[in-house]
Length: 293
Ligand code: C5P
Image (cartoon, rainbow, N blue to C red):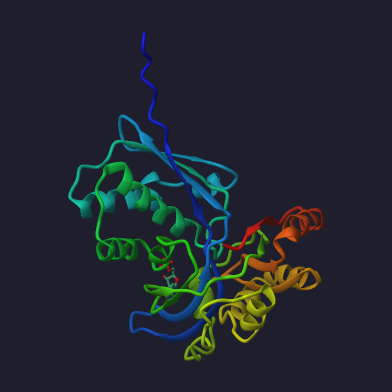
């Protein structure tokens, strides 16, 4: 007797998006800010799985699943499924989406945006319906300013409001430690607290960084313009940065996005040890580590 095997789910890591540098270069009439940012996608993230089911269904699991509680229709991954079907002109696919939420929510590392972008990519395979790059970009942007960049989880330069993308430099093989004090900061509040909005663009970005030291030296010549206002609004971010900067094994530390997550760059061989020690010293912080790209 033959047993039909259930189709295995399509699974992908929805990588965190880290703003290694972020300059605010202006503001549009609609209030959105113009930026110039170098982003990387470490091998740390949420997990998205799609499998056939009788009807569209979302299952949330993982350490931060509870933070996403609320009307299911509000979830960005379900919105992504609905908009994909509308855009592609197909019926709403019957599938179960399992989102394993490992990244803290609304924490400056694009977790929700990356979940949505990963879902869009998986949906193309799942439905066999492939959109043009241009259509996919517009669809992603309709879900949020950070969603397009998350469609291609590799180093990129983001300009405009985050929608003007170009390939970023080759990054050195190194490690990253992500730390969040588990205190939320409101993105609009951080943007509103900026005192200067017309800042210079990023200095010329080389095609490749040969070493961690070279990357750290470049990043030291840039800023995250949102870091000052975020630290003022949330002093715990300052405590995280002090802890990272005090560690001699960390070559460079900064806040990502509008916070509160900060990152430290280090040799890959030391990342796990740094994570373990920070966790011991600060058991209430969220900490993760892995390869930078
Ligand atoms: O697009 P998203 O929902 O992530 O943006 C959240 C908020 O962050 C916006 O409502 C806006 O206040 C602010 N923002 C901004 N400029 C950007 C991106 C976000 O002012 N480029």
